[in-house]
Length: 492
Image (tube, rainbow, N blue to C red; front, side, top):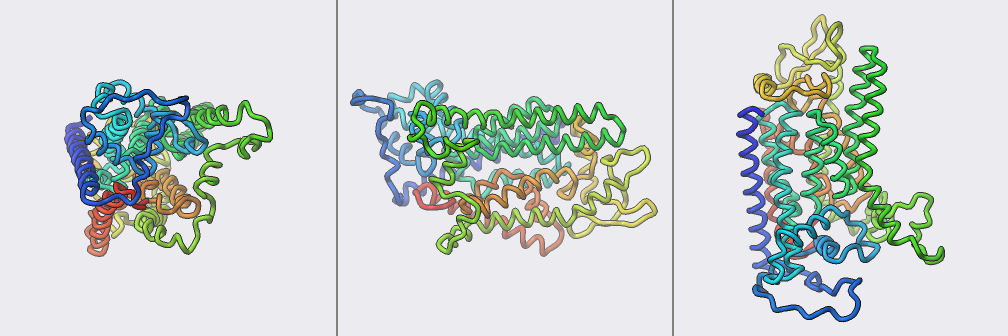
């Protein structure tokens, strides 16, 4: 990797570390200054599988430290810590996928095991969860930067987008015992390797992301996108065998990404549905295709299409409105430019493949692309071409297809699969899920930060004003989230 990328990557690692230190400091500070709304999280009955009276515990060496750590276990963190300690005891606990509890349990029973006599088992589990998620976020930020450089081919925009990711509105969840950090690490890392040619490693990482969050299975779409590109290029060259091979490879990789999630659903079915009589079976066990996760979301949390559209939920829609607005703007701005981008790609004829490099001399429009008519048709040129040329010299050769030779910037065809992914997530967040979860549900989606970075870097004063609003929104939600979430008040 070139020196320029390596130097900026080191800066991102430092910023990611600083951001986690800042968030943890805010959590501790707000926890110290304010009383929690709900203290029931401190209740910790013995594991269900332990029969009889639990053995007496030795006095802890640092009981106050243990109490302070345990009090920071709030909201869904309670479930993750409980599963790490006791396993999947009840049906509703299967809504929390196993990667974070398994990693937490492993770390607490290995590296952090000597701390058990000092602060107790639950505090060690909580500490392990905090360590895992904060370390995972730091490396997720690094992959985010590498992916941004690879797709945008623009150092400045990629760096600013990575800074925004380090200080994103859902930051409190990336430093708490939630699955966001592990999901971001494996999904961003997997997508990076998809587009840099390491398909097997990409498949493994994306499969693991599906054991952190259920939406990790959607990352199979990136393999499908590349498959379509390869089939198109093979078809344009009349290479049928190559096209068939691309379809087979893409299908196998996509199926493998689903395996961990499907295996966990099968594990839940085996634990809950096997061994009982037909009358005792839960409703989802009797379905033609039993889907435990969907049943739990609907039955216990009321998740469903339009089910959250109630007058009493208006405050939650307002809470989610900034991230949804930013997501919709990211999608709509790209959608408006897409016909021009596609036109510039298909106009290439003769010996050049349809996805080959697009170069021309043209002036810059407000949104970073401009069109100039000539005998050869219309061509698109992204702003900061000089920056893009420098990045191209630094990047390693890409083996995934000539589509990677398109121009740099947010408005290039390589952003398309990310936009499609974000569009599906945004639709789901608004119409199906608890809408306030949108802030963290969409927080690992790169186009949001890419669009925001180009908005902030735009020479247009009107767009620059929106950049200030975006910065204010990020800062406000970091402070608000650290205050409300850590004290068991509703946030997202």
